[in-house]
Length: 62
Image 1 (cartoon, rainbow, N blue to C red):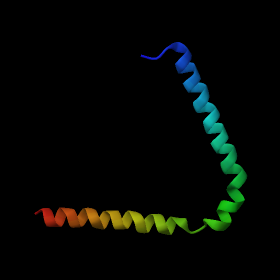
Image 2: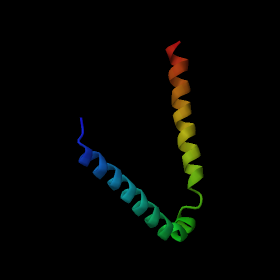
Image 3: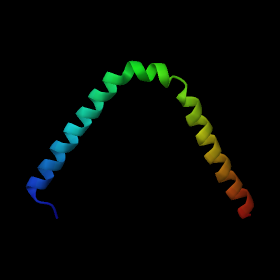
Image 4: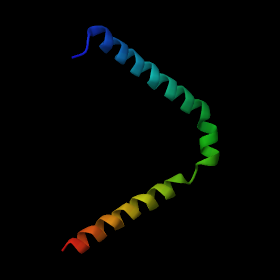
C-alpha cells in the first residue's frame, strides 16, 4: 500500500512533529500557568452539559 520510503518519511515526520510540539509547549508553560489556570472548570462544565444532553436523549427515547 505504501512504499518503504513513504513509511520512513511518515515516521520521521511524526517524530519531528512530536518534538516540535513538546518544545513549543515547554516554552509556553509559564504563560499557560498564568492565563489558563482554571480551565479545568470549563472542561468539567462542558462534559457535564454533554452528559445532561445524553440523559435527556435517553429519557425521551422511552
